[in-house]
Amino acid sequence: MAKVALKNAEELALMREAGRLLALVFKYLDGEVRVGMSTMAINDLAERYIVGELGARPASKGQYGYQYVLNSSVNHVVCHGVPSENQTLKPGDIVNVDITLERGGFIADSSKMYMIGEVTPLAQRLVDKTYEAMWQGIRMVKPGATLGDVGHAIQHYAEKHGYSIVREYCGHGIGREMHEEPAVLHFGRPGKGLVLQEGMTFTIEPMINQGKAKVKTKKDGWTVVTSDKKLSAQWEHTIAVTSTGYEVLTLRDEERV
Image: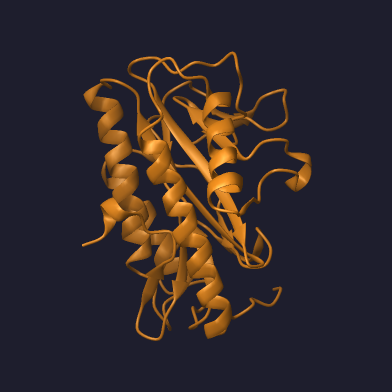
C-alpha cells in the first residue's frame, strides 16, 4: 500500500483556506443556477469567479486532459458529466456540480446537488438520503477508526433506504495533488481497511443510485451514467482527521451549526 501523506499544521491551514474559498464558489453559484441555464454557463461562471474574484486556480482544468473547471452530472449521470452549451437545465432536473480549487499549493474538492425548479418527491428523497449518507460516513472519522467503518456507515444507510452504492468510483486522499492515497470506498466492513491518523486528508463523496448499482461510461470517455437510466445523486466534502475527530474543510455556510 502506498504511503498516506500526513499534513502538518501549516499545510492544514493552507488546505483550510482552499476549502473556504471553494465553499464561496458554491455560495456564488447558489444564486445563479436556474432553469434554462446551460451546464457550460455554470462552468464559465465558476471559472470567472474562481480566477477573477478569488485569485485561485480551478484545479480540474487540464487535469488528465480535462478541458473544464467542473463536472455537471444531470439526473442519471453518476459522475464526470461534461459541461455543454447544448445541455440546458429543465424544471425537475437534479444536477451535481463538482469543483476543485487550488490555492497556496493545496487543493480542495467538493460537490453539491442542485434541484432545478420543482423536483419530484422521489428525486428529492434520493438527494436528501445521499446527503445524509455522506454525513454518516463523515461522522465515523477519527483517529483509530478505519476506512471500513466509514464505508460501512455509508453503505448501511443507503441500502437501508432502498438505494445502491456505486462501487467503481470512490473518494481519495487530497493535498498538493488532487488524487493522493488512500482510496476511500463508500462500502465496507467495520474494523477493516486503513486505520485513520491525525493529519490525513481525503474526500468522502458517495454516488448513490435510485436503481441498480451498475454504471457505464459514455463514448466521450468521461460521462458515467446509470445502466438502468434511473437517477443518481452525489455529495462531496474534503475532510481532515483531527486529534479528536474530523474537520470538514469545505463546509458551506448553510451547513454550519
